[in-house]
Length: 430
Image (tube, rainbow, N blue to C red; front, side):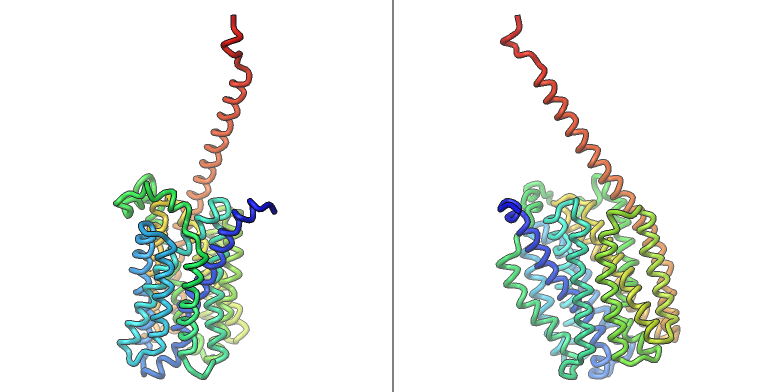
């Protein structure tokens, strides 16, 4: 490899590696409330409805965090906003561990969610822009693989029962992000695509999401994000309690969560690779049929082996499908509004993520059981599948148009070169 190639590749590798580390901590903190739920409920004497509010408080913070994080990043830079976001969720993860009552717990989880929400659109924008259009899908998949791995780490902490305290996972989720912030300050480069586009960034950046043919893709991205994240967050927040409710122990529930996150990591990589190779209809059908079947299996599993397998498959398709959506969204926005576009989609997705645990908590309180919660997700999954199919087709046709335009431009350039070489110089004419 030449020195030029090394100097070109180094910022790419460094950006993806640092974003991967932040994504790991994002995954750990997102999973932390679910892992700590049993001890948290006992410590504060919380019922299932109150626990659903604890879960949803964190997700509620994700909503304004995602939108504000994307909007600010298009104005003051991805790097600054990402550093502030990581510091914010680190501090309030520690505050969650130190909460003294139900209200302080809700506030700490909400502000943790604001930091987590603001970080994600910047992770996606930085990774997709440094990788370029050709490698965007795989780069975002590699980065986002950190989220399920971090969630898996949270499950391992739950299995290990470090110190016998429910706060252990929250201490890790608070201290490590604060240690990462100086690394971001020293080694994370700012997005070149944003720097090149900043002069063209219009004051009405939000309106850019609905101009130049972006309105329909924006609305469909929002629909697919909403229903897909609704399912993902039911799994993240309620699966341990659902598994325990089916007669398994808390330790076995942690193993199921680990299987879910291992499946998510494998699915993120495989489906990120497959999105550039499978037809749009096949990819959409594969992801959402896989989600439907795995949720049904989770509701019907009677032994630990079946539950582990169903958890792995659910993570593979639900989180893997979520990652495909994250890789799709940047294709539809120019750099000056890209973080805002991704941030708004993530924010809408968080509405689904917030509603999912609340609906699940209500249904469980009414006695529907695990199977009822899982089957109630089916209509939303079908709607998300249709929206994702259209987006995949639109992305492929847009890529084909760009390729034709590039070939046409190359052909015109070659014709111009031939014309110039065959022309007789004026000075030689008689």
